[in-house]
Length: 173
Image 1 (tube, rainbow, N blue to C red):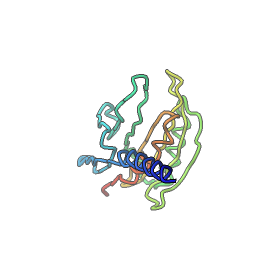
Image 2 (image 1 turned 90 degrees about the horizontal axis):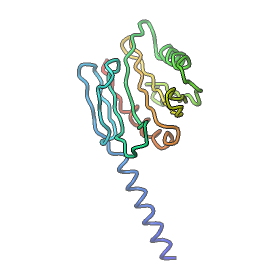
Image 3 (image 1 turned 135 degrees about the vertical axis):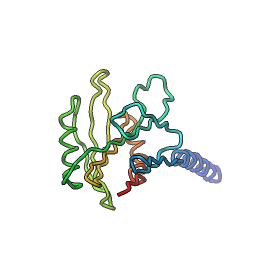
Image 4 (image 1 turned 90 degrees about the vertical axis):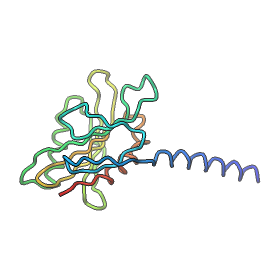
């Protein structure tokens, strides 16, 4: 019985340690675009696409993983809109993209700050299936889309991280 308790305690400490490492976040502030967001501390911020306001990528640990988990933030002019119209526009736009497969789940934040949906799509070059959760916000005549992407096999593991990132986003009005 004592051996079983010791084994259970060691297992608990091992998994608690892994979870606490995954929960280490750093803050990124963008004064020009008036936002602040927290991302995992080991992720890299890049400016590789001028159309996006922010991109962060998990460093690759496996050389064959062509699609590391990543997030991006996009601001789209949406005059005379609201959260519902921005959400509908985002879903409609995603449905029209080449490689789009399906929307599998939809929801609204408890705080009602944002709405979200999960979609699956194929990379057209490699046929790799990816899952994306899109968080839609609306402020100052703009739809703000926080897009979080992971390979199909790792999406469920990163989904809680993506929600934590979404909850951390601060938009200045």
